[in-house]
Amino acid sequence: MSTPAPEDFSYYPQPRPRLSVDELLAAKNTQPIRSLDDLAADTFESDEELEEFLAFTYAERHRDAA
Image 1 (tube, one colour):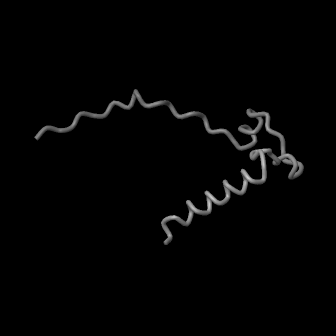
Image 2 (cartoon, rainbow, N blue to C red):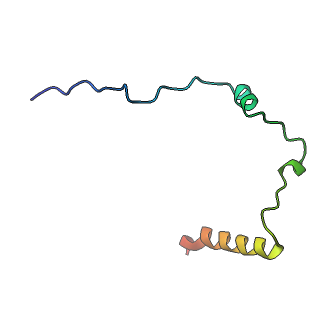
Protein backbone atom coordinates (compact mmCIF):
# COMPACT_ATOMS: atom_id res chain seq x y z
CA MET A 1 0.00 0.00 0.00
CA SER A 2 1.24 3.44 -0.78
CA THR A 3 0.73 6.46 1.36
CA PRO A 4 -1.41 9.20 -0.12
CA ALA A 5 0.41 12.28 -1.37
CA PRO A 6 -0.08 15.44 0.65
CA GLU A 7 -2.89 17.54 -0.75
CA ASP A 8 -2.03 20.75 -2.54
CA PHE A 9 -4.24 23.50 -1.13
CA SER A 10 -2.65 26.30 -3.19
CA TYR A 11 -5.58 26.34 -5.63
CA TYR A 12 -8.12 27.15 -2.92
CA PRO A 13 -9.11 30.81 -2.68
CA GLN A 14 -7.52 32.75 0.10
CA PRO A 15 -9.88 33.67 2.93
CA ARG A 16 -11.09 37.24 2.88
CA PRO A 17 -10.39 39.40 5.89
CA ARG A 18 -13.20 39.34 8.41
CA LEU A 19 -15.03 42.62 8.64
CA SER A 20 -17.31 43.80 11.38
CA VAL A 21 -20.97 44.47 10.67
CA ASP A 22 -20.30 48.22 10.88
CA GLU A 23 -17.48 47.91 8.32
CA LEU A 24 -19.68 45.90 5.95
CA LEU A 25 -22.52 48.42 6.24
CA ALA A 26 -20.14 51.32 5.65
CA ALA A 27 -18.70 49.62 2.56
CA LYS A 28 -22.21 49.32 1.09
CA ASN A 29 -23.12 52.89 2.10
CA THR A 30 -26.28 51.65 3.81
CA GLN A 31 -28.62 53.83 5.79
CA PRO A 32 -30.78 52.81 8.75
CA ILE A 33 -34.47 52.13 8.16
CA ARG A 34 -36.31 55.12 9.56
CA SER A 35 -39.91 54.12 8.77
CA LEU A 36 -41.96 51.37 7.19
CA ASP A 37 -42.24 53.53 4.08
CA ASP A 38 -38.53 52.82 3.49
CA LEU A 39 -39.49 49.17 2.98
CA ALA A 40 -42.47 49.79 0.72
CA ALA A 41 -42.24 48.46 -2.83
CA ASP A 42 -44.69 48.27 -5.71
CA THR A 43 -44.08 44.61 -6.49
CA PHE A 44 -47.53 43.81 -7.88
CA GLU A 45 -49.29 45.90 -10.47
CA SER A 46 -52.77 45.17 -9.09
CA ASP A 47 -54.63 43.64 -6.17
CA GLU A 48 -55.65 40.77 -8.46
CA GLU A 49 -52.01 39.97 -9.25
CA LEU A 50 -51.22 39.97 -5.53
CA GLU A 51 -54.19 37.65 -4.81
CA GLU A 52 -53.03 35.24 -7.54
CA PHE A 53 -49.54 35.17 -6.06
CA LEU A 54 -50.86 34.55 -2.53
CA ALA A 55 -53.16 31.75 -3.73
CA PHE A 56 -50.28 30.12 -5.64
CA THR A 57 -47.94 30.42 -2.64
CA TYR A 58 -50.55 28.94 -0.29
CA ALA A 59 -51.23 26.05 -2.67
CA GLU A 60 -47.52 25.28 -3.11
CA ARG A 61 -46.87 25.30 0.62
CA HIS A 62 -49.74 22.88 1.24
CA ARG A 63 -49.28 20.70 -1.85
CA ASP A 64 -47.43 17.87 -0.08
CA ALA A 65 -49.41 18.13 3.16
CA ALA A 66 -52.44 16.28 1.80
